[in-house]
Image (cartoon, rainbow, N blue to C red; front, side, top):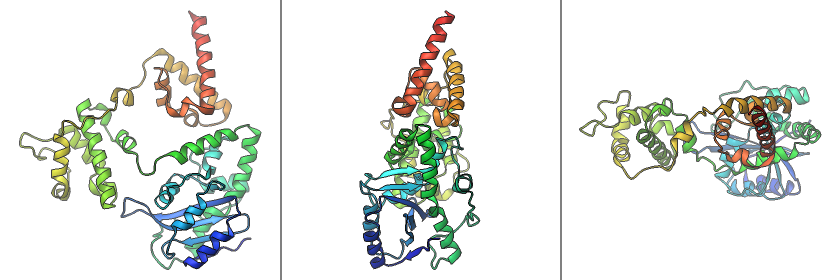
Length: 366
């Protein structure tokens, strides 16, 4: 069993950079704190190579950027599990994206496992090993960390390379290596921390509002994100989703006040009331979103047939339905709209086969 090294000073970190310079494949995991901030505060980086296990204390070293830059080089293959949040945290320190990403959670989903499978069940399925996941709420900013906490962090990276070797063999056997390459490149290309549209679409009851009120909600979402980034505070500390929905629905009264809107804390109105009012009054703040497309459900007869055949094909491929194509994408597709995800790559080839089949079925029934 490999003994891990705990790095808490710059000299040791610089030596590590030199030692792993020739390692092409490196498994990575991070621990960060985000309880009181908008941006994730990187606390630990755990890594594993063929011969090394390392835990880096990011709060103690002087310059973590130089290490992350060394990882993000073109000749590196970085293996992570459920990489999205780790990428967000790492990108704050280096904007390079030339490395090759492998996400073992994505790889597992493409060989028939659950789409959001955790590391513990995946480890049990692939290597028949068990890891302790009892430490679920750790303040990674506190120092010193206990031996148990550090060991817990190291467990998250120790087995990633062996897991990937097993998944890789399955993907090669299924001729799906190009699939995971495509999925991981798409994940790597996502702009960190920018997801205003996704946050807007998750607002409860938003689909029932008219176009003007949807615009208000979307503008408030964008305003909140900018304010949270500027102050480096959690977005819900600025104003909650529920309050945004209420403001969008009711707006201001004739006296330009929020008096008719319940459940808006006084401290929010004191701090941000005037800014929120400005957003509500800005008639030029019109968005380019086509809300009818964002929220519509297709009523075309092709939808049910397309949905049925897509589910059958997902079963044949032994992957979950939404990994192949989501219901929203099916709804859009039945109206001739292609999402970026299904426009190219392996999904595009599969979708074209389905559309050809539907065309034959439709023509034969006429």
